Amino acid sequence: MQGQSGCGPSAVEVERLYEEYRAYAFAIAYRMLGTVSDAEDAVHDLFTELAGWDGAHVRHWKGYLAKWVTNRCLNALRSARRQRELYTGEWLPEPWMSAELDPGEELVRKDTLGYAYMVLLERLAPAERAVFVLREAFGYGYDEIGAMLDKSEANCRKICSRAKQRLQEADSADSAEARRAAVSGGSARVGHGDDGGGAGARAMRSEADGGAGARAMRSEADGGAGARAMRSEADGGAGARAMRSEAGGGAGARAMRSEAGGGAGARAVRSEAGGGAGARAGLAADRAAVVGRFIAAFRSCDAAAMLAVLTEDARLVTDGGDRVRSAIRPILGADRVTALLTSPRAFVSPRQWTSAPVQLNGALGLVFALNGEVKAALAFRFAAEGDKLERLYWVLNPEKLTHLQPPPAPAR
Image 1 (cartoon, one colour):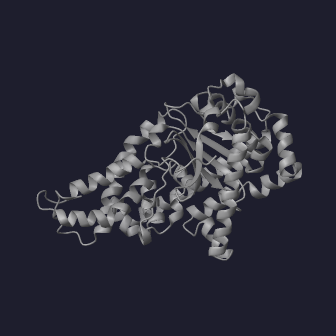
Image 2 (image 1 turned 135 degrees about the horizontal axis):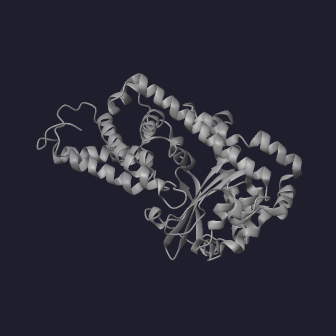
Image 3 (image 1 turned 30 degrees about the horizontal axis):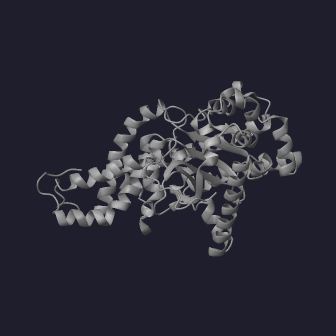
């Protein structure tokens, strides 16, 4: 922001701008940073400093504020990258359950709020993320983005293309990694989980697990013959596994190609092709049923029921930071995810917490609470058909949950 201090907009004008553009600025900042508190700080600083700057030359406040908040977030991201590299375990974005991220008609593609989408954005360099967010979520032209970021239009176009490619490759790589783990089944012991499944399970041994040690989970989290047999029974045997691995395993990558490629997201395609509002209602009902079956299987430690709601290439990522011990690496494949989530010696405390379905980042998720305090949030990415879960993101770090409201009433 440039201008002279002391001759900025009046207090009344700043207040009007705040009311009109606060949600819009926050929507940009949250997608850029992935943290609610940092996004709120960026927006607060924006409007605090606004009163001290000369705004006489500003003709289009929306674009001007977008430029300011984006560049501030770029600086914050560059500082945060090193901290996130040193973070204990997997770093996940803070989930959000407020309409403030949907600033009406201003948001071109609401699917860019999705939690799995936010996780993938962490794979981008700061400049890639800025260009991608401004272009794909908010519909700015490359010439406008170039002016905001002091880059040429051609350069912004190349950066956005590179960002899309990186997102597609990252999502495809995640799915392939989980499929490889599913094929290997439970043959890899927890202690040798170089692919992420074993080492992550070994780390699940804390308050979130009811204090269960790594030794107690080695036989449970390796998948084992029992889990493979249950999957065969629940999913229709080896033939069904092979067909799902080949035909359905790439569903996440196909959805990501549609979403990251600049066109309508997979959800929009399904709703339009399937009849609009009726199809959307049907998909929402399917997802609600899947989440209901998931929480029932989780609470009862029902492995067969859990396998039935997971895709073959399911991926569980947990984030406890240095506050709550959690899986250091993702848990890969339906067998391993099931073995961990249904082990009687793991996740003992969460099974006792109250839970309720909520909208997390615009999609159905779960919030867990104890005595009125949110203890965890669980976000999902659903398979394209809406009948199974392919990504599970479990946030346990209390520092990332303070902004969430606990369930209004126990829903066990």
